[in-house]
Length: 393
Ligand code: PLP
Image (cartoon, rainbow, N blue to C red; front, top):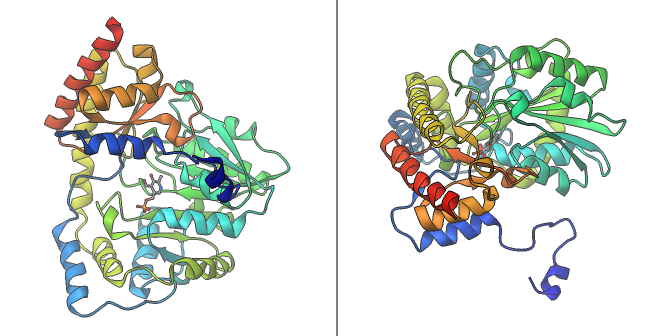
Protein backbone atom coordinates (compact mmCIF):
# COMPACT_ATOMS: atom_id res chain seq x y z
CA UNK A 1 0.00 0.00 0.00
CA UNK A 2 1.21 3.51 -0.80
CA UNK A 3 2.26 5.71 2.12
CA UNK A 4 -0.46 8.20 1.20
CA UNK A 5 -3.28 5.71 1.66
CA UNK A 6 -1.62 3.93 4.58
CA UNK A 7 -1.69 7.27 6.41
CA UNK A 8 -5.33 7.78 5.56
CA UNK A 9 -6.34 4.61 7.38
CA UNK A 10 -6.89 4.79 11.12
CA UNK A 11 -4.03 3.52 13.29
CA UNK A 12 -6.22 0.74 14.64
CA UNK A 13 -6.47 -0.81 11.18
CA UNK A 14 -3.50 -3.13 11.31
CA UNK A 15 -3.66 -5.11 8.09
CA UNK A 16 -2.99 -2.72 5.26
CA UNK A 17 -2.19 -5.17 2.50
CA UNK A 18 -4.29 -7.88 0.92
CA UNK A 19 -5.19 -10.62 3.38
CA UNK A 20 -4.03 -14.15 2.53
CA UNK A 21 -7.68 -15.34 2.32
CA UNK A 22 -8.40 -12.70 -0.33
CA UNK A 23 -5.21 -13.58 -2.17
CA UNK A 24 -6.10 -17.27 -2.18
CA UNK A 25 -9.69 -16.55 -3.21
CA UNK A 26 -8.32 -14.54 -6.16
CA UNK A 27 -6.01 -17.39 -7.18
CA UNK A 28 -8.93 -19.86 -6.92
CA UNK A 29 -11.04 -17.60 -9.20
CA UNK A 30 -8.70 -18.40 -12.07
CA UNK A 31 -8.79 -22.18 -11.49
CA UNK A 32 -11.42 -24.83 -12.16
CA UNK A 33 -12.35 -27.79 -9.95
CA UNK A 34 -10.91 -26.38 -6.74
CA UNK A 35 -11.79 -28.49 -3.66
CA UNK A 36 -12.71 -25.93 -1.04
CA UNK A 37 -11.84 -26.94 2.50
CA UNK A 38 -11.16 -23.36 3.52
CA UNK A 39 -14.12 -21.43 4.88
CA UNK A 40 -16.14 -22.69 7.83
CA UNK A 41 -19.28 -22.69 5.70
CA UNK A 42 -21.14 -26.02 5.59
CA UNK A 43 -21.75 -27.35 2.08
CA UNK A 44 -24.92 -28.95 3.48
CA UNK A 45 -28.23 -27.27 2.69
CA UNK A 46 -30.35 -25.54 5.31
CA UNK A 47 -33.01 -28.19 6.18
CA UNK A 48 -36.18 -27.82 4.04
CA UNK A 49 -38.59 -27.05 6.91
CA UNK A 50 -36.38 -24.13 7.97
CA UNK A 51 -36.23 -22.76 4.43
CA UNK A 52 -40.01 -23.07 4.19
CA UNK A 53 -40.50 -21.09 7.40
CA UNK A 54 -38.37 -18.32 5.87
CA UNK A 55 -40.35 -18.44 2.62
CA UNK A 56 -43.65 -18.35 4.51
CA UNK A 57 -42.46 -15.34 6.50
CA UNK A 58 -41.57 -13.59 3.27
CA UNK A 59 -44.99 -14.52 1.81
CA UNK A 60 -46.68 -12.97 4.87
CA UNK A 61 -44.78 -9.75 4.27
CA UNK A 62 -42.38 -10.03 7.22
CA UNK A 63 -40.18 -7.42 5.61
CA UNK A 64 -39.95 -4.76 8.30
CA UNK A 65 -37.73 -3.89 11.24
CA UNK A 66 -38.47 -6.15 14.17
CA UNK A 67 -38.18 -5.93 17.96
CA UNK A 68 -34.76 -4.44 18.82
CA UNK A 69 -33.80 -7.46 20.97
CA UNK A 70 -35.11 -9.95 18.41
CA UNK A 71 -38.40 -11.69 17.67
CA UNK A 72 -39.96 -12.42 21.10
CA UNK A 73 -40.97 -15.99 20.11
CA UNK A 74 -37.41 -16.63 18.93
CA UNK A 75 -35.88 -15.32 22.16
CA UNK A 76 -38.25 -17.53 24.15
CA UNK A 77 -37.25 -20.55 22.03
CA UNK A 78 -33.54 -19.69 22.47
CA UNK A 79 -33.97 -19.46 26.27
CA UNK A 80 -35.71 -22.86 26.31
CA UNK A 81 -33.08 -24.37 24.05
CA UNK A 82 -30.19 -23.12 26.19
CA UNK A 83 -31.87 -24.58 29.29
CA UNK A 84 -32.64 -27.88 27.57
CA UNK A 85 -28.92 -28.32 26.84
CA UNK A 86 -27.82 -27.77 30.44
CA UNK A 87 -27.26 -24.04 30.13
CA UNK A 88 -28.33 -21.24 32.45
CA UNK A 89 -31.88 -20.13 33.04
CA UNK A 90 -32.34 -16.98 30.92
CA UNK A 91 -35.48 -14.96 30.47
CA UNK A 92 -36.18 -13.83 26.88
CA UNK A 93 -35.21 -10.26 27.79
CA UNK A 94 -31.72 -11.48 28.66
CA UNK A 95 -31.14 -12.53 25.05
CA UNK A 96 -30.24 -10.35 22.07
CA UNK A 97 -30.61 -11.73 18.55
CA UNK A 98 -27.87 -10.45 16.23
CA UNK A 99 -27.06 -10.66 12.52
CA UNK A 100 -24.69 -13.60 13.15
CA UNK A 101 -22.57 -14.47 16.16
CA UNK A 102 -19.67 -12.58 14.64
CA UNK A 103 -21.52 -9.27 14.91
CA UNK A 104 -22.18 -10.10 18.58
CA UNK A 105 -18.43 -10.30 19.25
CA UNK A 106 -17.98 -6.64 18.32
CA UNK A 107 -21.02 -5.50 20.30
CA UNK A 108 -19.80 -7.39 23.37
CA UNK A 109 -16.18 -6.20 23.11
CA UNK A 110 -17.15 -2.56 22.59
CA UNK A 111 -19.56 -2.81 25.51
CA UNK A 112 -17.17 -4.41 27.99
CA UNK A 113 -13.65 -3.23 27.24
CA UNK A 114 -11.98 0.04 28.13
CA UNK A 115 -8.68 1.15 26.55
CA UNK A 116 -5.85 -0.72 28.25
CA UNK A 117 -8.02 -3.54 29.59
CA UNK A 118 -6.68 -6.99 28.87
CA UNK A 119 -8.71 -9.68 27.17
CA UNK A 120 -7.38 -13.22 27.29
CA UNK A 121 -8.02 -15.21 24.11
CA UNK A 122 -7.13 -18.75 23.07
CA UNK A 123 -4.36 -18.92 20.47
CA UNK A 124 -5.04 -20.21 17.93
CA UNK A 125 -8.67 -19.19 18.24
CA UNK A 126 -11.38 -17.43 16.29
CA UNK A 127 -9.60 -14.24 15.33
CA UNK A 128 -12.51 -11.75 15.18
CA UNK A 129 -12.45 -11.76 19.00
CA UNK A 130 -8.99 -10.20 18.82
CA UNK A 131 -10.07 -7.80 16.10
CA UNK A 132 -13.08 -6.72 18.16
CA UNK A 133 -10.85 -6.19 21.19
CA UNK A 134 -8.35 -4.16 19.17
CA UNK A 135 -11.12 -1.94 17.83
CA UNK A 136 -12.03 -1.36 21.48
CA UNK A 137 -8.41 -0.29 22.17
CA UNK A 138 -8.04 -3.19 24.59
CA UNK A 139 -4.92 -5.31 24.84
CA UNK A 140 -5.20 -8.83 23.48
CA UNK A 141 -3.41 -11.44 25.59
CA UNK A 142 -3.13 -14.68 23.61
CA UNK A 143 -2.78 -17.97 25.45
CA UNK A 144 -0.66 -20.14 23.23
CA UNK A 145 -1.92 -23.72 23.08
CA UNK A 146 0.02 -26.64 21.68
CA UNK A 147 -0.17 -30.30 20.83
CA UNK A 148 0.84 -31.02 24.45
CA UNK A 149 -2.78 -30.37 25.52
CA UNK A 150 -4.27 -31.28 22.13
CA UNK A 151 -4.63 -27.54 21.50
CA UNK A 152 -7.16 -27.08 24.28
CA UNK A 153 -7.19 -24.36 26.88
CA UNK A 154 -6.36 -25.35 30.46
CA UNK A 155 -6.86 -23.40 33.68
CA UNK A 156 -3.14 -23.62 34.35
CA UNK A 157 -2.35 -21.90 31.06
CA UNK A 158 -4.99 -19.22 31.62
CA UNK A 159 -3.75 -18.54 35.18
CA UNK A 160 -0.29 -17.65 33.84
CA UNK A 161 -1.79 -14.86 31.72
CA UNK A 162 -3.94 -13.16 34.35
CA UNK A 163 -2.76 -9.72 35.47
CA UNK A 164 -4.43 -6.89 37.44
CA UNK A 165 -5.54 -5.51 34.06
CA UNK A 166 -7.34 -8.68 32.95
CA UNK A 167 -11.03 -8.05 32.45
CA UNK A 168 -12.41 -10.55 29.95
CA UNK A 169 -11.64 -14.16 29.08
CA UNK A 170 -12.78 -15.76 25.84
CA UNK A 171 -13.54 -19.48 25.83
CA UNK A 172 -14.46 -21.05 22.49
CA UNK A 173 -15.69 -24.57 23.02
CA UNK A 174 -15.38 -26.46 20.71
CA UNK A 175 -12.62 -24.26 19.38
CA UNK A 176 -12.13 -22.94 15.86
CA UNK A 177 -9.64 -23.55 14.13
CA UNK A 178 -8.44 -26.52 16.16
CA UNK A 179 -11.70 -28.53 16.41
CA UNK A 180 -10.79 -29.42 19.98
CA UNK A 181 -12.87 -29.50 23.15
CA UNK A 182 -12.06 -28.23 26.64
CA UNK A 183 -13.33 -30.96 28.98
CA UNK A 184 -16.05 -30.11 31.55
CA UNK A 185 -13.72 -30.44 34.57
CA UNK A 186 -11.24 -28.03 32.96
CA UNK A 187 -14.06 -25.58 32.17
CA UNK A 188 -14.99 -25.72 35.86
CA UNK A 189 -11.42 -24.88 36.87
CA UNK A 190 -11.33 -21.99 34.38
CA UNK A 191 -14.63 -20.72 35.79
CA UNK A 192 -13.18 -20.76 39.33
CA UNK A 193 -10.27 -18.65 38.08
CA UNK A 194 -12.70 -16.19 36.53
CA UNK A 195 -14.49 -15.82 39.87
CA UNK A 196 -11.23 -15.51 41.80
CA UNK A 197 -9.95 -12.74 39.50
CA UNK A 198 -13.29 -11.08 38.76
CA UNK A 199 -13.19 -11.80 35.01
CA UNK A 200 -16.12 -11.72 32.62
CA UNK A 201 -16.21 -14.81 30.41
CA UNK A 202 -17.39 -14.72 26.82
CA UNK A 203 -18.38 -18.31 26.21
CA UNK A 204 -18.66 -19.10 22.51
CA UNK A 205 -20.75 -22.25 22.26
CA UNK A 206 -21.67 -22.00 18.57
CA UNK A 207 -20.30 -25.49 17.83
CA UNK A 208 -21.64 -27.11 21.02
CA UNK A 209 -24.10 -29.38 19.17
CA UNK A 210 -21.30 -30.69 16.96
CA UNK A 211 -19.08 -32.97 19.05
CA UNK A 212 -17.72 -36.46 18.40
CA UNK A 213 -17.17 -39.60 20.45
CA UNK A 214 -18.18 -39.03 24.06
CA UNK A 215 -17.22 -35.37 24.20
CA UNK A 216 -19.59 -33.09 26.10
CA UNK A 217 -19.66 -29.30 26.26
CA UNK A 218 -20.13 -27.74 29.68
CA UNK A 219 -22.06 -24.48 29.27
CA UNK A 220 -20.12 -21.92 31.32
CA UNK A 221 -23.04 -19.81 32.56
CA UNK A 222 -24.71 -22.73 34.38
CA UNK A 223 -21.69 -23.30 36.65
CA UNK A 224 -21.95 -21.96 40.22
CA UNK A 225 -21.33 -18.21 40.38
CA UNK A 226 -20.92 -17.86 36.61
CA UNK A 227 -24.30 -16.69 35.34
CA UNK A 228 -23.67 -13.11 36.45
CA UNK A 229 -20.23 -12.93 34.82
CA UNK A 230 -20.79 -14.85 31.57
CA UNK A 231 -21.93 -13.72 28.16
CA UNK A 232 -22.94 -16.80 26.18
CA UNK A 233 -22.59 -16.42 22.42
CA UNK A 234 -24.03 -18.75 19.83
CA UNK A 235 -25.92 -18.87 16.55
CA UNK A 236 -27.62 -20.91 13.89
CA UNK A 237 -24.93 -20.97 11.20
CA UNK A 238 -23.15 -24.14 12.19
CA UNK A 239 -25.61 -26.63 13.75
CA UNK A 240 -28.38 -25.84 11.24
CA UNK A 241 -26.23 -25.01 8.18
CA UNK A 242 -27.62 -21.47 8.12
CA UNK A 243 -24.53 -19.33 7.51
CA UNK A 244 -26.19 -17.16 4.85
CA UNK A 245 -29.27 -16.39 6.95
CA UNK A 246 -27.14 -14.42 9.42
CA UNK A 247 -28.70 -15.15 12.78
CA UNK A 248 -26.79 -15.40 16.05
CA UNK A 249 -27.36 -14.27 19.61
CA UNK A 250 -25.84 -13.53 22.97
CA UNK A 251 -27.26 -14.01 26.43
CA UNK A 252 -26.24 -12.67 29.80
CA UNK A 253 -27.34 -10.98 33.02
CA UNK A 254 -30.14 -8.50 32.40
CA UNK A 255 -28.36 -5.29 33.41
CA UNK A 256 -25.47 -5.93 31.02
CA UNK A 257 -27.86 -7.03 28.29
CA UNK A 258 -29.88 -3.80 28.53
CA UNK A 259 -26.73 -1.77 27.83
CA UNK A 260 -25.43 -4.12 25.15
CA UNK A 261 -28.80 -4.24 23.39
CA UNK A 262 -28.50 -0.48 22.94
CA UNK A 263 -25.09 -0.89 21.26
CA UNK A 264 -26.47 -3.70 19.11
CA UNK A 265 -29.41 -1.53 18.09
CA UNK A 266 -27.05 1.25 17.04
CA UNK A 267 -25.19 -1.17 14.76
CA UNK A 268 -27.96 -3.36 13.42
CA UNK A 269 -31.43 -1.95 14.30
CA UNK A 270 -32.75 -5.50 14.10
CA UNK A 271 -32.09 -8.81 12.35
CA UNK A 272 -33.86 -9.70 9.07
CA UNK A 273 -37.35 -10.87 10.11
CA UNK A 274 -37.39 -13.62 7.50
CA UNK A 275 -34.19 -15.06 8.95
CA UNK A 276 -35.52 -14.88 12.49
CA UNK A 277 -38.62 -16.86 11.53
CA UNK A 278 -36.38 -19.45 9.88
CA UNK A 279 -34.28 -19.61 13.08
CA UNK A 280 -37.46 -20.06 15.12
CA UNK A 281 -38.39 -23.04 12.94
CA UNK A 282 -34.87 -24.42 13.42
CA UNK A 283 -35.32 -24.50 17.20
CA UNK A 284 -38.95 -25.53 17.38
CA UNK A 285 -38.99 -28.03 14.49
CA UNK A 286 -37.53 -31.55 14.28
CA UNK A 287 -33.95 -31.82 15.58
CA UNK A 288 -32.93 -34.99 13.68
CA UNK A 289 -31.33 -32.77 11.02
CA UNK A 290 -28.69 -31.64 13.53
CA UNK A 291 -27.80 -35.24 14.39
CA UNK A 292 -27.67 -36.17 10.69
CA UNK A 293 -25.27 -33.32 9.97
CA UNK A 294 -23.18 -34.22 13.01
CA UNK A 295 -22.87 -37.80 11.74
CA UNK A 296 -21.94 -36.56 8.28
CA UNK A 297 -19.12 -34.43 9.70
CA UNK A 298 -18.01 -37.35 11.84
CA UNK A 299 -17.62 -39.58 8.75
CA UNK A 300 -15.72 -36.83 6.95
CA UNK A 301 -13.53 -36.29 9.99
CA UNK A 302 -12.57 -39.97 10.00
CA UNK A 303 -11.85 -39.96 6.25
CA UNK A 304 -9.64 -36.86 6.50
CA UNK A 305 -7.77 -38.13 9.56
CA UNK A 306 -7.12 -41.50 7.85
CA UNK A 307 -5.64 -39.65 4.88
CA UNK A 308 -3.42 -37.49 7.08
CA UNK A 309 -2.29 -40.59 9.02
CA UNK A 310 -1.30 -42.26 5.74
CA UNK A 311 0.83 -39.22 4.85
CA UNK A 312 2.42 -39.08 8.30
CA UNK A 313 0.96 -35.64 9.02
CA UNK A 314 0.13 -35.15 12.69
CA UNK A 315 -2.93 -33.23 13.82
CA UNK A 316 -4.83 -32.25 16.93
CA UNK A 317 -7.48 -34.86 17.71
CA UNK A 318 -10.66 -33.30 16.27
CA UNK A 319 -13.36 -33.59 18.96
CA UNK A 320 -15.89 -31.02 17.84
CA UNK A 321 -16.84 -28.37 15.23
CA UNK A 322 -15.88 -29.32 11.67
CA UNK A 323 -12.16 -28.67 11.41
CA UNK A 324 -8.90 -30.59 11.50
CA UNK A 325 -5.77 -28.73 12.59
CA UNK A 326 -2.74 -30.34 10.99
CA UNK A 327 1.01 -29.77 11.28
CA UNK A 328 2.11 -29.50 7.64
CA UNK A 329 5.36 -27.71 8.46
CA UNK A 330 6.73 -30.74 10.33
CA UNK A 331 5.70 -32.96 7.42
CA UNK A 332 7.07 -30.82 4.59
CA UNK A 333 9.68 -28.48 6.07
CA UNK A 334 7.98 -25.37 4.65
CA UNK A 335 5.81 -22.82 6.50
CA UNK A 336 2.08 -23.59 6.59
CA UNK A 337 1.10 -20.39 4.74
CA UNK A 338 3.48 -21.25 1.89
CA UNK A 339 2.12 -24.80 1.87
CA UNK A 340 -1.46 -23.49 1.53
CA UNK A 341 -0.55 -21.32 -1.46
CA UNK A 342 1.29 -24.20 -3.14
CA UNK A 343 -1.50 -26.68 -2.42
CA UNK A 344 -3.95 -24.31 -4.06
CA UNK A 345 -1.82 -23.49 -7.09
CA UNK A 346 -0.45 -27.01 -7.68
CA UNK A 347 -3.14 -29.25 -6.18
CA UNK A 348 -6.25 -27.10 -6.46
CA UNK A 349 -7.20 -27.66 -2.82
CA UNK A 350 -8.06 -24.66 -0.66
CA UNK A 351 -7.17 -24.80 3.05
CA UNK A 352 -6.17 -22.03 5.46
CA UNK A 353 -2.97 -21.42 7.45
CA UNK A 354 -3.24 -21.27 11.25
CA UNK A 355 -1.71 -17.79 11.26
CA UNK A 356 -5.13 -16.46 10.20
CA UNK A 357 -6.38 -17.56 13.61
CA UNK A 358 -3.71 -15.73 15.55
CA UNK A 359 -1.24 -18.59 15.61
CA UNK A 360 2.16 -16.93 15.61
CA UNK A 361 3.97 -20.12 14.66
CA UNK A 362 3.39 -20.80 10.96
CA UNK A 363 3.22 -24.60 11.25
CA UNK A 364 -0.39 -25.69 11.17
CA UNK A 365 -3.25 -25.52 8.67
CA UNK A 366 -6.99 -25.67 9.22
CA UNK A 367 -8.93 -28.03 6.99
CA UNK A 368 -12.73 -27.70 7.00
CA UNK A 369 -14.93 -30.78 6.71
CA UNK A 370 -17.18 -28.99 4.25
CA UNK A 371 -17.06 -31.42 1.33
CA UNK A 372 -18.47 -34.97 0.94
CA UNK A 373 -16.18 -37.94 1.74
CA UNK A 374 -15.26 -38.69 -1.94
CA UNK A 375 -14.13 -35.06 -2.40
CA UNK A 376 -12.17 -35.19 0.83
CA UNK A 377 -10.46 -38.36 -0.40
CA UNK A 378 -9.73 -36.66 -3.71
CA UNK A 379 -8.30 -33.69 -1.77
CA UNK A 380 -6.08 -36.05 0.22
CA UNK A 381 -4.77 -37.59 -3.03
CA UNK A 382 -3.96 -34.14 -4.43
CA UNK A 383 -2.38 -33.09 -1.16
CA UNK A 384 -0.20 -36.20 -1.15
CA UNK A 385 1.11 -35.35 -4.62
CA UNK A 386 2.06 -31.82 -3.47
CA UNK A 387 3.61 -33.11 -0.23
CA UNK A 388 5.67 -35.66 -2.22
CA UNK A 389 6.86 -32.93 -4.60
CA UNK A 390 7.94 -30.70 -1.72
CA UNK A 391 9.65 -33.57 0.08
CA UNK A 392 11.59 -34.40 -3.08
CA UNK A 393 12.87 -30.82 -3.56
N1 PLP B 1 -17.91 -18.25 16.67
C1 PLP B 1 -17.05 -19.09 16.09
C2 PLP B 1 -16.11 -19.86 16.95
C3 PLP B 1 -17.01 -19.22 14.70
O1 PLP B 1 -16.15 -20.07 14.15
C4 PLP B 1 -17.87 -18.44 13.91
C5 PLP B 1 -17.83 -18.52 12.43
O2 PLP B 1 -17.04 -19.18 11.84
C6 PLP B 1 -18.75 -17.58 14.55
C7 PLP B 1 -18.76 -17.52 15.95
C8 PLP B 1 -19.67 -16.67 13.81
O3 PLP B 1 -20.64 -17.30 13.07
P1 PLP B 1 -21.89 -16.51 12.52
O4 PLP B 1 -21.55 -15.06 12.45
O5 PLP B 1 -22.15 -17.09 11.17
O6 PLP B 1 -23.00 -16.76 13.51
